[in-house]
Image 1: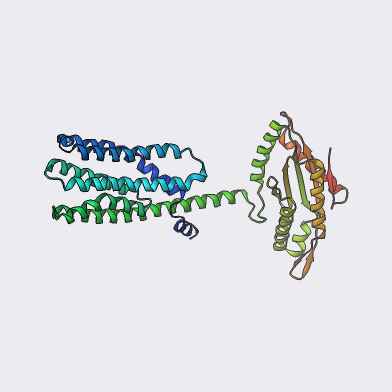
Image 2: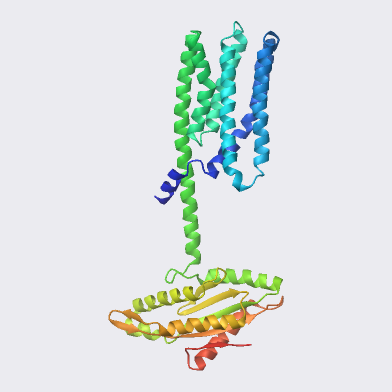
Length: 372
């Protein structure tokens, strides 16, 4: 449902505009070919030189403008995107209108049955191609079709000329409008499905890196991030810190109050960790059971120890109420900091943090230790 609401709001978003531009790019070149075929077949230009020249100049001019616009604005910055879109839509509508007016003038000229038949075939072909190309936006598709055909329909009707052709063009316009509506609905449905698929993929990707119980990153995501930050620290010769955190005597919570109480306490511990380690670069993860690990790129040993002490003090002050009983636990933390060298092993830093954590437990728990 979220995807459907998003799609119904966006109108002409960047994805739709990009699709319109890509789908219409090839069609621009057809105008150069078609105008030449119509004007030069049966030496039409010799009998109508002034009109032929004007028609060629207008069509060539708008097509060249669209090609230049496409080239220039493809390299423009994002802040010009709105102007880019307005120019694009206007130039498309103007192309249809120029051709449509030329078509109308063409059809009220005396004689020229061969040229007129060719013009009708080319116009309906360009109209059908444009409708298909602009299906991502129904309004543009309809406007283009109307611009191509309406001038001739009204002009021929006003001059009371060739009513069968007027009828055919009118019903062709209705048919193209119907096709544009159906095509746009199918395009929107396909775009919505694509959007929902991407949303689902993002959700699955997020789930794959998040611990379902605590909402912290899981061990897998931590390992991937640690490898990335370790390699960056090796290249930049920068510090990287690790804090290992363990809930003291956590087994007693499960034994005395049950596993649901233990799960609740783990969730509360996760919230406390997020509140203390809140830099964008900090990676806080559940390392296993009641053990947590914090990765802090670029952090000094002193600051790491200070943050660890804040975390220890926060946990010491925290009391969780569960089914009328108070659960209170403390944390032991081990801190390790290193500027890694090329030949150092990643595991060495975690091992140092683990040894520091062991030192905290050996010294009576509820404390922060570090090893130089």
